[in-house]
Image (cartoon, rainbow, N blue to C red):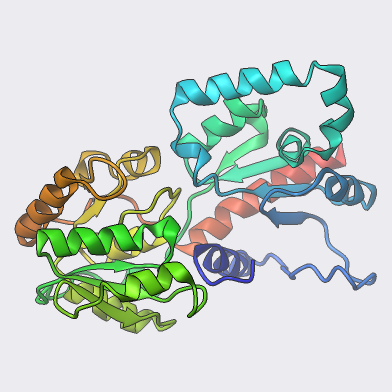
Length: 327
Protein backbone atom coordinates (compact mmCIF):
# COMPACT_ATOMS: atom_id res chain seq x y z
CA UNK A 1 0.00 0.00 0.00
CA UNK A 2 3.02 2.28 0.42
CA UNK A 3 4.40 1.54 -3.05
CA UNK A 4 3.75 3.34 -6.30
CA UNK A 5 2.11 1.38 -9.09
CA UNK A 6 -1.11 0.21 -10.69
CA UNK A 7 -3.07 -0.30 -7.46
CA UNK A 8 -2.51 3.33 -6.51
CA UNK A 9 -3.65 4.49 -9.95
CA UNK A 10 -6.73 2.26 -9.82
CA UNK A 11 -7.87 3.60 -6.44
CA UNK A 12 -7.28 7.26 -7.28
CA UNK A 13 -8.89 7.04 -10.72
CA UNK A 14 -11.84 4.98 -9.46
CA UNK A 15 -12.57 7.75 -6.97
CA UNK A 16 -12.44 10.36 -9.74
CA UNK A 17 -14.67 8.26 -12.03
CA UNK A 18 -17.30 7.82 -9.34
CA UNK A 19 -17.29 11.52 -8.51
CA UNK A 20 -17.87 12.29 -12.19
CA UNK A 21 -21.16 10.38 -11.81
CA UNK A 22 -22.22 12.35 -8.75
CA UNK A 23 -21.20 9.77 -6.17
CA UNK A 24 -19.80 11.28 -3.00
CA UNK A 25 -16.53 9.49 -2.22
CA UNK A 26 -14.19 9.83 0.74
CA UNK A 27 -11.14 7.83 1.72
CA UNK A 28 -11.87 6.03 4.97
CA UNK A 29 -10.72 7.96 8.00
CA UNK A 30 -10.71 5.11 10.49
CA UNK A 31 -9.92 7.51 13.34
CA UNK A 32 -12.92 9.74 12.59
CA UNK A 33 -16.03 8.52 14.41
CA UNK A 34 -18.09 11.28 12.81
CA UNK A 35 -17.45 10.08 9.24
CA UNK A 36 -20.57 8.65 7.62
CA UNK A 37 -21.24 6.70 4.46
CA UNK A 38 -23.64 4.26 2.84
CA UNK A 39 -21.14 1.66 1.68
CA UNK A 40 -17.50 0.63 2.03
CA UNK A 41 -15.36 -0.24 -0.99
CA UNK A 42 -12.30 -2.21 0.10
CA UNK A 43 -9.34 -2.77 -2.25
CA UNK A 44 -7.62 -5.99 -1.24
CA UNK A 45 -8.69 -8.89 0.97
CA UNK A 46 -10.47 -7.70 4.09
CA UNK A 47 -10.19 -9.69 7.29
CA UNK A 48 -13.24 -11.41 8.71
CA UNK A 49 -13.11 -9.13 11.75
CA UNK A 50 -13.18 -6.09 9.42
CA UNK A 51 -16.24 -7.52 7.71
CA UNK A 52 -17.99 -8.08 11.04
CA UNK A 53 -17.29 -4.51 12.17
CA UNK A 54 -18.59 -3.16 8.85
CA UNK A 55 -21.74 -5.26 9.17
CA UNK A 56 -22.33 -4.07 12.74
CA UNK A 57 -21.94 -0.49 11.51
CA UNK A 58 -24.59 -1.11 8.86
CA UNK A 59 -22.11 -0.70 6.00
CA UNK A 60 -22.29 -3.26 3.19
CA UNK A 61 -18.83 -3.98 1.83
CA UNK A 62 -17.78 -4.22 -1.82
CA UNK A 63 -14.39 -5.85 -2.21
CA UNK A 64 -12.09 -5.45 -5.21
CA UNK A 65 -9.23 -7.90 -5.57
CA UNK A 66 -6.48 -8.17 -8.13
CA UNK A 67 -5.91 -11.90 -8.51
CA UNK A 68 -2.66 -11.35 -10.36
CA UNK A 69 -1.07 -14.71 -9.62
CA UNK A 70 -4.11 -16.87 -8.93
CA UNK A 71 -6.05 -15.98 -12.08
CA UNK A 72 -3.18 -17.23 -14.25
CA UNK A 73 -3.35 -20.76 -12.87
CA UNK A 74 -4.98 -23.44 -14.99
CA UNK A 75 -8.71 -23.97 -14.59
CA UNK A 76 -8.17 -27.56 -13.51
CA UNK A 77 -5.79 -26.43 -10.77
CA UNK A 78 -8.30 -23.86 -9.52
CA UNK A 79 -11.08 -26.47 -9.42
CA UNK A 80 -8.79 -28.79 -7.41
CA UNK A 81 -7.94 -25.88 -5.12
CA UNK A 82 -11.65 -25.27 -4.52
CA UNK A 83 -12.23 -28.95 -3.76
CA UNK A 84 -9.31 -29.01 -1.32
CA UNK A 85 -10.60 -25.91 0.45
CA UNK A 86 -14.08 -27.39 0.84
CA UNK A 87 -12.66 -30.72 2.05
CA UNK A 88 -10.22 -29.12 4.48
CA UNK A 89 -12.92 -26.99 6.07
CA UNK A 90 -14.86 -30.12 7.00
CA UNK A 91 -12.03 -31.06 9.37
CA UNK A 92 -13.12 -30.01 12.91
CA UNK A 93 -9.78 -28.42 13.82
CA UNK A 94 -9.81 -26.27 10.66
CA UNK A 95 -13.42 -25.28 11.24
CA UNK A 96 -12.26 -23.66 14.48
CA UNK A 97 -9.71 -21.48 12.65
CA UNK A 98 -11.93 -20.76 9.65
CA UNK A 99 -12.74 -17.28 10.91
CA UNK A 100 -9.02 -16.45 10.86
CA UNK A 101 -8.63 -17.28 7.15
CA UNK A 102 -8.98 -13.98 5.34
CA UNK A 103 -9.82 -15.54 1.99
CA UNK A 104 -13.12 -16.76 3.44
CA UNK A 105 -14.31 -13.13 3.27
CA UNK A 106 -14.77 -13.58 -0.49
CA UNK A 107 -17.81 -15.72 0.34
CA UNK A 108 -18.97 -13.54 3.22
CA UNK A 109 -18.59 -10.13 1.58
CA UNK A 110 -21.84 -8.69 0.20
CA UNK A 111 -20.19 -8.22 -3.20
CA UNK A 112 -16.93 -8.81 -5.08
CA UNK A 113 -15.61 -6.85 -8.06
CA UNK A 114 -12.98 -8.12 -10.51
CA UNK A 115 -11.90 -7.07 -13.97
CA UNK A 116 -11.53 -10.34 -15.86
CA UNK A 117 -13.45 -13.55 -16.51
CA UNK A 118 -10.40 -15.53 -15.35
CA UNK A 119 -10.59 -13.67 -12.01
CA UNK A 120 -14.31 -14.39 -11.74
CA UNK A 121 -13.45 -18.07 -12.29
CA UNK A 122 -11.12 -17.90 -9.26
CA UNK A 123 -13.91 -16.58 -7.04
CA UNK A 124 -16.48 -19.10 -8.30
CA UNK A 125 -14.38 -22.27 -8.45
CA UNK A 126 -11.65 -21.79 -5.85
CA UNK A 127 -13.58 -19.79 -3.24
CA UNK A 128 -17.18 -20.84 -4.06
CA UNK A 129 -18.61 -17.33 -4.32
CA UNK A 130 -22.08 -17.28 -5.93
CA UNK A 131 -22.00 -15.63 -9.37
CA UNK A 132 -24.72 -13.14 -8.39
CA UNK A 133 -22.30 -11.65 -5.86
CA UNK A 134 -19.58 -11.03 -8.44
CA UNK A 135 -19.41 -8.14 -10.91
CA UNK A 136 -17.01 -7.68 -13.81
CA UNK A 137 -15.85 -4.07 -13.99
CA UNK A 138 -12.95 -3.23 -16.33
CA UNK A 139 -10.01 -1.02 -15.47
CA UNK A 140 -9.80 2.29 -17.27
CA UNK A 141 -7.34 4.71 -18.81
CA UNK A 142 -7.17 8.46 -18.35
CA UNK A 143 -8.32 10.74 -21.14
CA UNK A 144 -4.67 11.61 -21.81
CA UNK A 145 -4.03 8.03 -22.94
CA UNK A 146 -7.39 7.49 -24.62
CA UNK A 147 -6.84 10.57 -26.77
CA UNK A 148 -3.14 9.96 -27.42
CA UNK A 149 -3.31 7.96 -30.64
CA UNK A 150 -0.36 6.56 -32.58
CA UNK A 151 2.88 8.49 -32.83
CA UNK A 152 5.89 8.37 -35.09
CA UNK A 153 7.30 5.13 -33.65
CA UNK A 154 10.58 6.50 -34.96
CA UNK A 155 12.94 5.36 -32.20
CA UNK A 156 14.91 2.18 -32.71
CA UNK A 157 14.05 0.66 -29.33
CA UNK A 158 11.22 -1.32 -27.80
CA UNK A 159 9.81 0.07 -24.56
CA UNK A 160 8.69 -1.43 -21.26
CA UNK A 161 7.15 0.55 -18.39
CA UNK A 162 6.77 -0.36 -14.75
CA UNK A 163 8.63 -0.82 -11.50
CA UNK A 164 12.09 -2.41 -11.79
CA UNK A 165 11.40 -5.41 -9.61
CA UNK A 166 11.55 -9.19 -9.53
CA UNK A 167 7.83 -9.59 -10.22
CA UNK A 168 8.27 -7.70 -13.50
CA UNK A 169 11.23 -9.94 -14.43
CA UNK A 170 13.24 -6.85 -15.33
CA UNK A 171 16.63 -8.61 -15.08
CA UNK A 172 15.56 -11.50 -17.32
CA UNK A 173 14.17 -9.09 -19.92
CA UNK A 174 17.39 -7.06 -19.83
CA UNK A 175 19.41 -10.27 -20.30
CA UNK A 176 17.18 -11.18 -23.25
CA UNK A 177 17.79 -7.75 -24.77
CA UNK A 178 21.56 -8.31 -24.59
CA UNK A 179 21.35 -11.84 -25.99
CA UNK A 180 19.01 -10.84 -28.84
CA UNK A 181 20.85 -7.56 -29.44
CA UNK A 182 17.52 -5.74 -29.32
CA UNK A 183 17.47 -2.27 -27.72
CA UNK A 184 14.90 -1.98 -24.92
CA UNK A 185 14.10 1.22 -23.05
CA UNK A 186 13.03 0.56 -19.46
CA UNK A 187 10.89 3.34 -17.96
CA UNK A 188 10.59 2.95 -14.22
CA UNK A 189 12.30 2.92 -10.86
CA UNK A 190 12.92 0.44 -8.04
CA UNK A 191 11.02 0.34 -4.78
CA UNK A 192 14.28 1.29 -3.06
CA UNK A 193 17.65 2.46 -4.45
CA UNK A 194 19.51 -0.20 -2.42
CA UNK A 195 17.21 -3.05 -3.45
CA UNK A 196 19.54 -5.97 -4.40
CA UNK A 197 17.42 -6.76 -7.45
CA UNK A 198 17.74 -3.17 -8.67
CA UNK A 199 21.52 -3.33 -8.18
CA UNK A 200 21.62 -6.47 -10.37
CA UNK A 201 19.56 -4.69 -13.02
CA UNK A 202 21.79 -1.59 -12.97
CA UNK A 203 24.78 -3.68 -14.05
CA UNK A 204 22.95 -4.56 -17.28
CA UNK A 205 22.36 -0.94 -18.33
CA UNK A 206 24.73 -0.17 -21.21
CA UNK A 207 22.68 2.48 -23.08
CA UNK A 208 22.84 0.31 -26.16
CA UNK A 209 20.73 -2.79 -25.60
CA UNK A 210 19.43 -1.80 -22.17
CA UNK A 211 18.48 1.85 -21.61
CA UNK A 212 16.83 3.43 -18.59
CA UNK A 213 14.45 6.36 -18.35
CA UNK A 214 13.56 7.25 -14.74
CA UNK A 215 9.93 6.87 -13.72
CA UNK A 216 7.75 9.89 -14.41
CA UNK A 217 4.28 10.81 -13.16
CA UNK A 218 3.69 12.95 -16.26
CA UNK A 219 1.17 11.25 -18.55
CA UNK A 220 2.24 13.57 -21.38
CA UNK A 221 5.83 12.40 -21.03
CA UNK A 222 4.84 8.73 -20.89
CA UNK A 223 2.68 9.22 -23.99
CA UNK A 224 5.57 10.79 -25.82
CA UNK A 225 7.91 7.94 -24.89
CA UNK A 226 5.38 5.30 -25.91
CA UNK A 227 4.44 6.94 -29.20
CA UNK A 228 8.09 7.14 -30.22
CA UNK A 229 8.91 3.49 -29.48
CA UNK A 230 8.94 0.64 -31.99
CA UNK A 231 6.81 -1.66 -29.84
CA UNK A 232 5.97 -2.59 -26.26
CA UNK A 233 7.39 -5.56 -24.36
CA UNK A 234 6.56 -6.95 -20.92
CA UNK A 235 7.61 -10.12 -19.10
CA UNK A 236 5.94 -10.03 -15.69
CA UNK A 237 5.65 -13.21 -13.70
CA UNK A 238 1.95 -12.47 -13.39
CA UNK A 239 -0.53 -9.69 -14.12
CA UNK A 240 -4.25 -9.31 -14.31
CA UNK A 241 -5.40 -6.17 -16.12
CA UNK A 242 -2.01 -4.69 -17.00
CA UNK A 243 -2.40 -0.90 -17.16
CA UNK A 244 1.02 -0.35 -18.77
CA UNK A 245 0.20 -2.69 -21.67
CA UNK A 246 -3.14 -0.96 -22.23
CA UNK A 247 -1.46 2.45 -22.16
CA UNK A 248 0.95 1.24 -24.84
CA UNK A 249 -1.93 -0.03 -26.99
CA UNK A 250 -3.68 3.34 -26.63
CA UNK A 251 -0.50 4.88 -28.05
CA UNK A 252 -0.61 2.58 -31.08
CA UNK A 253 2.02 0.01 -30.13
CA UNK A 254 2.06 -3.71 -30.89
CA UNK A 255 2.79 -5.77 -27.79
CA UNK A 256 4.93 -8.75 -26.85
CA UNK A 257 3.83 -10.09 -23.45
CA UNK A 258 3.81 -13.23 -21.33
CA UNK A 259 1.47 -16.02 -22.43
CA UNK A 260 -0.99 -16.18 -19.53
CA UNK A 261 -4.73 -16.23 -18.90
CA UNK A 262 -5.02 -12.45 -18.50
CA UNK A 263 -3.20 -11.64 -21.73
CA UNK A 264 -5.02 -14.25 -23.81
CA UNK A 265 -8.36 -12.97 -22.49
CA UNK A 266 -7.51 -9.35 -23.28
CA UNK A 267 -5.51 -9.65 -26.51
CA UNK A 268 -6.22 -13.08 -28.00
CA UNK A 269 -4.21 -13.62 -31.20
CA UNK A 270 -3.60 -9.89 -31.65
CA UNK A 271 -0.46 -9.92 -29.49
CA UNK A 272 2.88 -11.69 -29.67
CA UNK A 273 3.80 -13.93 -26.75
CA UNK A 274 6.89 -15.18 -24.98
CA UNK A 275 7.12 -18.96 -24.77
CA UNK A 276 7.70 -18.99 -21.02
CA UNK A 277 8.62 -16.56 -18.26
CA UNK A 278 12.36 -16.01 -17.94
CA UNK A 279 15.45 -16.38 -20.08
CA UNK A 280 15.49 -19.04 -22.79
CA UNK A 281 16.84 -19.35 -26.31
CA UNK A 282 13.29 -19.48 -27.65
CA UNK A 283 12.46 -16.22 -25.90
CA UNK A 284 15.60 -14.67 -27.40
CA UNK A 285 14.31 -15.71 -30.81
CA UNK A 286 10.82 -14.34 -30.14
CA UNK A 287 12.15 -11.00 -28.91
CA UNK A 288 14.36 -10.68 -31.97
CA UNK A 289 11.48 -11.60 -34.30
CA UNK A 290 9.09 -9.16 -32.63
CA UNK A 291 11.65 -6.38 -32.98
CA UNK A 292 12.06 -7.13 -36.69
CA UNK A 293 8.30 -7.34 -37.32
CA UNK A 294 7.17 -4.48 -35.07
CA UNK A 295 7.17 -1.69 -37.70
CA UNK A 296 4.58 -3.61 -39.73
CA UNK A 297 2.45 -4.68 -36.73
CA UNK A 298 -0.63 -2.85 -35.46
CA UNK A 299 -1.73 -2.42 -31.89
CA UNK A 300 -4.39 -4.92 -30.74
CA UNK A 301 -7.84 -3.64 -31.69
CA UNK A 302 -9.44 -4.04 -28.28
CA UNK A 303 -11.93 -1.99 -26.27
CA UNK A 304 -10.24 0.58 -24.05
CA UNK A 305 -12.31 1.99 -21.20
CA UNK A 306 -12.29 5.38 -19.52
CA UNK A 307 -12.28 5.76 -15.75
CA UNK A 308 -15.60 7.56 -16.11
CA UNK A 309 -17.04 4.38 -17.67
CA UNK A 310 -15.62 2.44 -14.74
CA UNK A 311 -17.28 4.87 -12.33
CA UNK A 312 -20.61 4.38 -14.08
CA UNK A 313 -20.36 0.59 -13.84
CA UNK A 314 -19.41 0.75 -10.17
CA UNK A 315 -22.29 3.08 -9.42
CA UNK A 316 -24.65 0.39 -10.76
CA UNK A 317 -22.94 -2.19 -8.53
CA UNK A 318 -23.32 0.06 -5.50
CA UNK A 319 -27.02 0.59 -6.23
CA UNK A 320 -27.52 -3.16 -6.53
CA UNK A 321 -25.69 -3.85 -3.25
CA UNK A 322 -27.56 -1.11 -1.38
CA UNK A 323 -30.89 -2.35 -2.70
CA UNK A 324 -30.13 -5.85 -1.43
CA UNK A 325 -28.94 -4.43 1.89
CA UNK A 326 -32.19 -2.50 2.38
CA UNK A 327 -34.34 -5.64 2.13
